Length: 180
Image (cartoon, rainbow, N blue to C red):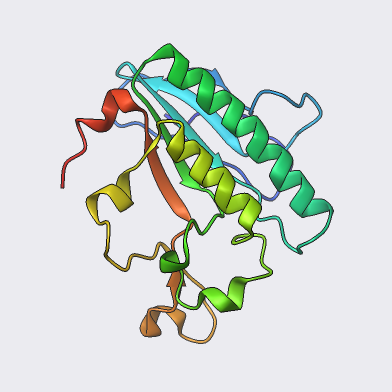
C-alpha cells in the first residue's frame, strides 16, 4: 500500500510495503506550513521510522532555489536531531541531491559552482553524519568509487561518469545491524 499525500508539484516521495503495515507519521517536513512540495514522508514499519526524502536540487546556484534548499536542509537537520534524541531505529533515505565529498563525483572540478556540491550543502550532510547518522553506503565501502546517479546525456553511465547523491543514513540504534 503506498503512502503519501497527493500534492501538486513536480516532485514527490512514496513508501511501499509488501506484507507489513505502514503507519504514517507525517507527510511533510516540519517547520514551514507554507511548503507544499511533496519532498518528505515519515512512516513507521515494523517499529522502524523511515523518512523518505527528496531534497531540492537547488540549481541554479546562487539563487532563490538554492536558498530554498538551504532552508529545507536546516529543517531536515532539526527533525533528524529530534529523531536521534528519541533513540529509536530510524532511517533517512532518498535523493539528497548532495555530493558529500570530491571522491563521490566523477569530476569534482566540474561541480564547483553547482548546488549539489557547494561547501554549505556538503557541510550540511557532514553535520548529519557528525551528529550520529551513519552513512551506510560509505561505511560499507569507505574507499570504493560508488555512484548512484549518471546523467542520461553523453553516455555517462557507460563512462562511469557519475555522482553519489542518493543516500541511506541510519540512526545509531540501527548501526549495528548494517551488514555487507
